[in-house]
Image 1 (cartoon, one colour):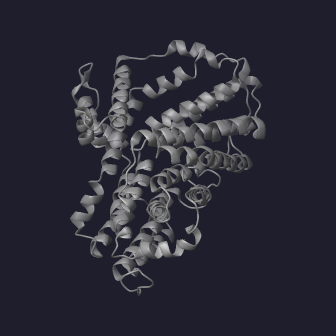
Image 2 (image 1 turned 90 degrees about the horizontal axis):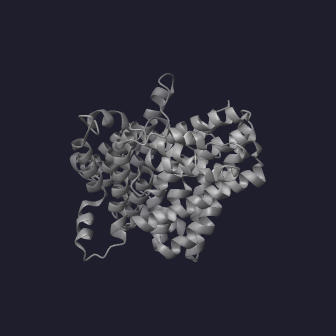
Length: 482
């Protein structure tokens, strides 16, 4: 994501000035190729928004971009903003952010973590214990969020490493902490209604009018994730060669005796199961059933909004289960909301037939993709995305590349749904360089526990693991079920 520019010096004025110039450039630049007058304006606005996202912020460049889109003829400002902020993806981000903040507030995440790490089957099995740490990270990443998960699991892991006598900046410390950052986003990829997944799926729908069924999507993502995690654990044993001797005789089961699984957490677990069933059942039910009709009309937005209503109504100890205003104030990621709100109108403008942009891109990419089999297209997508995301902003890449690559895939005989899914996972592998992502920044910045050499070495290994998982599991399985 875009890092906020420094509040002093040249950057305070230079980057905004460049952004505005780029946005206005379409009004003075001549058309070229197949790009029309409308298209050149849209392209300038898009480049300006990208510059703002990278060097300034996510909020006001997005809002300014939407204003500029209304000025170039996409629609009135009201229409542009309504299509952006009224989209399904924005509503899902808002309500799921509030719900997951509530799960964290009531301690369900800590309870799940403590329970999973204290199973008897882990005693004397160090690599199984390491896998369980990553599995807990995966689950927390799915239900809590990337950065909350990283800080939670880093805290637990650092205490464990210190207690067992592992050295800071040692192989084991770096392996576990980098692994947690590596796995944390995979849980976000698995759920098709998270902000990250929705950005990719929105690009798919914008370019092709196609959607993806939740159940096969999540099934494929789980298969890719578990393969990538297992590969990283195997790399830890045979390539990184971590020392697990101090984990062999440790008994963590006694910590499980102190778990407090209270009534509110049990209620939250029931609601989680209800959400999962409501969102995944339509993919398995006959369209003639009344329950299919109800769930289809509700959709993900209706389901999570209904759960929010229940939480506002149910009381524990005389108080509502959820303080909506308080949780909304602290949990809604407004930078992400504004970014996602602008992505919809911008994607519509870029793909518009009157812009001529897609036609030109197809012409430029034809020499690369023409004559390639669908399998080769999938391989190219996986490798290109995994490499590019190490050097370019992964959010911007997902927003900019997904609609174009999906349309290219459709034009050359590949499955655009599978391309979108592969891109969502591949672009999440941004961990091999300090500027690859915010997660990478956390890893390279944690110099107390992780040396720079380890960050680069293990980061590169993590990317290789993702590429292998995508090519060996994601592509063949995706061709079967999507």
